Length: 140
Image 1 (cartoon, rainbow, N blue to C red):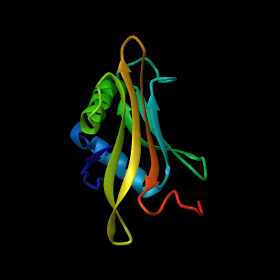
Image 2: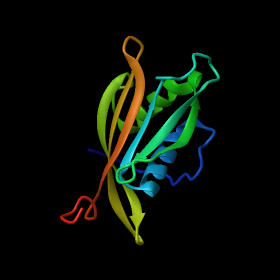
Image 3: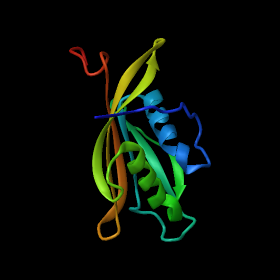
């Protein structure tokens, strides 16, 4: 597992360099769940928007937390790959991020899967699956 430091970014940034921090921050604030983004169902025009959707573990509601222009989507996938230390075309990485819980920094665990390969598909899935000492526990 790779541990990375992020900045708490509360709104979608204009610059690509801070976008992974924004997504991880948004997920940590929402709790255990998954964020998915892919080109399925997106209009084939450069200015179309690709939604990044959060699905919570318990309530299963879908919330769009970001939109990225279609013509920039592959660059955003490559940025995630770089931050997470995985292959920019396809790969998986386990990530640990320190995030405050009740005044203390606690490791939050994520798994990032992405495909950015022209002969296959363009998508990303980020699973927020654990908080050190909090979830999962015997009562969850």
